[in-house]
Length: 172
Image 1 (spheres, rainbow, N blue to C red):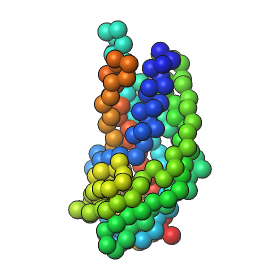
Image 2: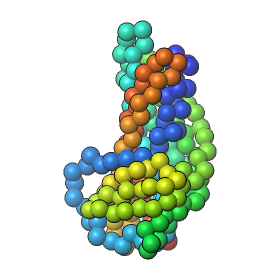
Image 3: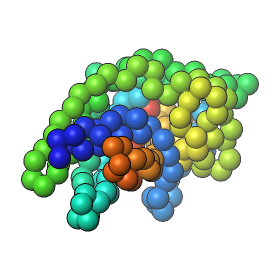
Image 4: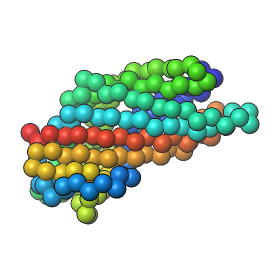
């Protein structure tokens, strides 16, 4: 079971930032995206499903981000760059036992090009983001909602992990 817990923690770290929005609430999204944005908070939670010897498991996942100095720059030519790092403290609970792992993610967003369509940003290039939903965009605030589903097989175990993240940025 301990080996399985580390597999889940690996999935969490690899999937922390990737995408879509299920929130139907309408918020302002008419601000200017071009500029430099500093991440002020990142909240992530989710769950993973697997089957061990015929017994299904639904495993809660929680991740806290600390020491965040992530910056994202959107340019007029539809390119983006990012810099910075963050510490991720992830935990999962399996059959009443909690497993914790900490790691440092350096420049987790990457760089490349972006396209805006409605309330969605499509990131391409040196990034794993893909399509991300804009929850709110004003002249000073950018909130992105991310949903990532990861299907993987580790040591013969099929695992599906779903992570939901809210990333808040302040214009610099």
